[in-house]
Image (cartoon, rainbow, N blue to C red):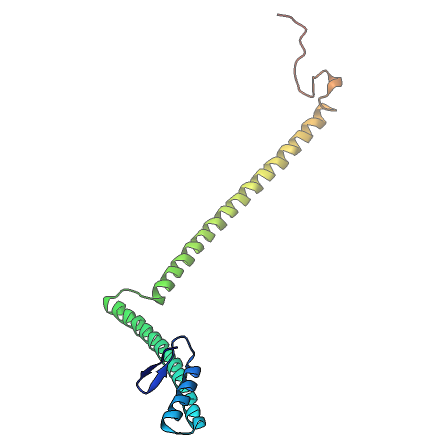
Length: 165
């Protein structure tokens, strides 16, 4: 296995930082005749510090991206305000208002059509009741009505002819 000495640290390809730090501490303590436990503790803390640094750097980068996105949104709103055009939420609100207005008009149209159809239905129901009453009166005046016994065929008023052409 090959070792590479870089800036006072030993790196070993394919191993974790903790194992590398432990091996470096052993090597350092052998060369400089220093206590291994103190160096191992120092290296472990150094690895922890590096990990925390990575973590907080990534969090900082995320925060910077969020901040930049917010600034971009604000800039778009300011530019839209300067040009007189609605932007962002104002555009959505305008579109929703138009949609609500269109639906309101549609509801009014359907309501008026519904009223008209009910009025037509009431007129037809009244006409059907009037015709039914007239048919009942006509039936009472003529007697028992049309039927096969009265000489009509199939309940129809028709003249019976025996002539052959």
